Image (cartoon, helix red, strand yellow):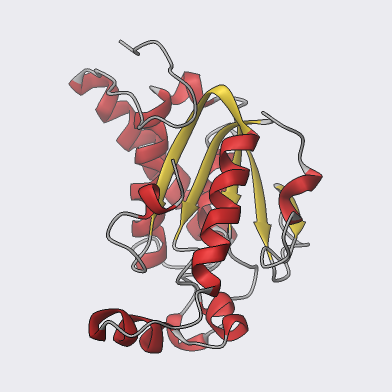
Length: 219
């Protein structure tokens, strides 16, 4: 049973599901993985599809099943680009989550600074370092928002003047760098609260830049 929503600043409600439902989710996501594998010419056991499988399971858990996910408009911040920026990372930073959500019947909206013009889901090429970039979307326009691995993405590293290794090294040594990422987190957090419907769901909010990213975003 899904508890009564308290607004976008709460953690996802715990949803009770039966073993049969969970099995149905695994089967459905397995079919999605197979479709993505064939359509985008990638091995079905590739790490990219293993990662998106976990993301899609999280989405089903948060919304309470496949039927509840149908038609939901979900914003994916830093969704990834059609061609990954760093060949060494393989195809990890392609928009797999949005692709998978669309296959499950949701209406994903992906935003990224890089080219996503060839994708079939709704998308916008935005520079999220520009304050107010997400103002193109009206208040309370999303049923769900995802923000996973955005703040440690390669494309962001190259634009703030510090790469991921330098930021992590400074963090562990207690060195204070110019906090461009901190300012960006405040902007993105405020936008997430503005854009989410009153009964909207926060999906995944995590990366390796913080032990408690959700708190830093003010969510």
